[in-house]
Length: 374
Image (cartoon, rainbow, N blue to C red; front, side, top):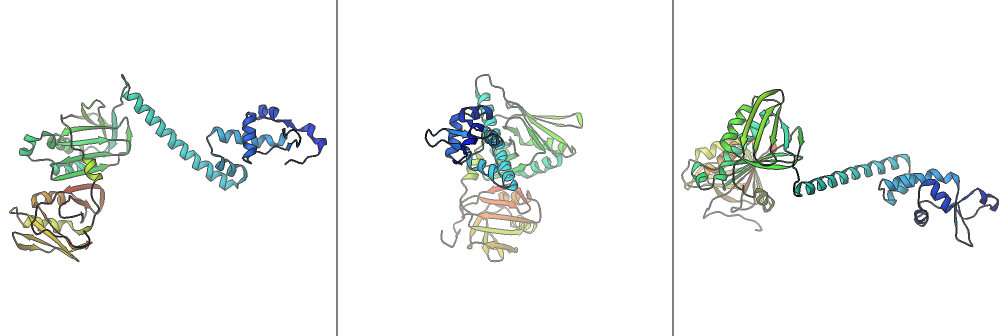
């Protein structure tokens, strides 16, 4: 307000005096006046000098505290002039953003420090249920390459273990299948890390982990290996050495998957039995049509299990011994097949477990067709 009884001007403070009293610079007070956030009690029309009253001090101090906390002016005005509920909502939202920003900054700085010469990385560690880990190993292990393929590509006989601040992932592939299982640990600590371990050795350890309810998994940050131990029994420890090699970039495969055009939901056991019954001779052709799929082997229809099919009809061929393990590795009564085209990897998911994904490569089929707008 600019109009004031001149007899009261003696009770007002100059901008400099008020600035010292509330801990704000005079330039900041001018800025807050221009923004209509903290108007002076009186402005001399001749000189333009600003004067402030003592009862403005609480508002000025609150402005200073809000700005020290990084509150934007739009939010500060709500806290100053809005209702109690509006002020609380703005403050809580700002506090959440501040925590996220601080955490991201801390993580970035710590990563830079670790990458500096002489930087120290903390060993990654998570805590998971032993039975859940054993189940995850059971699901991904079938995607490990055969002995013949491992002789040429030893890395395909390994399982990749990845730890970050949210998940633990197990990944395996034989170039025709890719299996990924994500686990949500009860707790995590240390730096993100990845290590390759021999699949056979991991399966042996998984059998032991099945009997350990509270299992702590540690991955050495230098990649030397994995240590599994029970917090309830200091003597219960198993070590897995790290394997050499570079695992295929599975994330690039997943990130570049084309859009799904066909979905098939079927009874997992029934479809698995039908695939197994077709035998190993030649490719097994799957054709979708409305409420069932038709399986054909060597030119003969072998089964027509019920299914829910969405998208245009499609014909696609598989190696039965590649598709069958992907079906067996699932959980629950149903299985979901997500098909982009007869020539792209097919995603096989457990309808009841979104944390497990298998990719299966189809095989060449001269009669493979797809209708629609492809």
